[in-house]
Image (cartoon, rainbow, N blue to C red):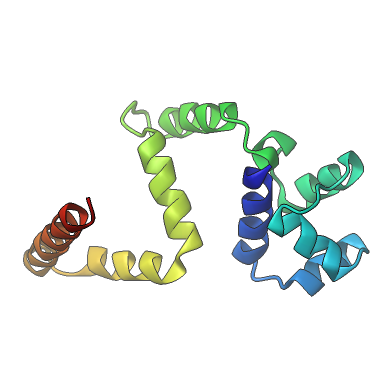
Length: 136
């Protein structure tokens, strides 16, 4: 249940909570949180329900069930009246939420005047393309 461990850690960090703060909210020991987030142990069903309510996500999301992504995609596409948002976009959003500095940097980039932004985008794309080739 690696996905569960990753999701628990991600959701906790997303709220800027320490393991100790989460443990206090659940009235359990911090070491229990550590075991869940490392994948050494699984929370019981009652605790999964508490975590689901605390983080306002489904248990299916917590355990990494795929249909959650499909449901989310369907809802996002409905809200934006498009079919162009796909699982790749959700992966990008997940990445940005897990890397707040990158999120801030991209936000800053989006606010630049178009000419400067286009230049920087070209530089970034070129660098990433070259880096990808170098590691393959």
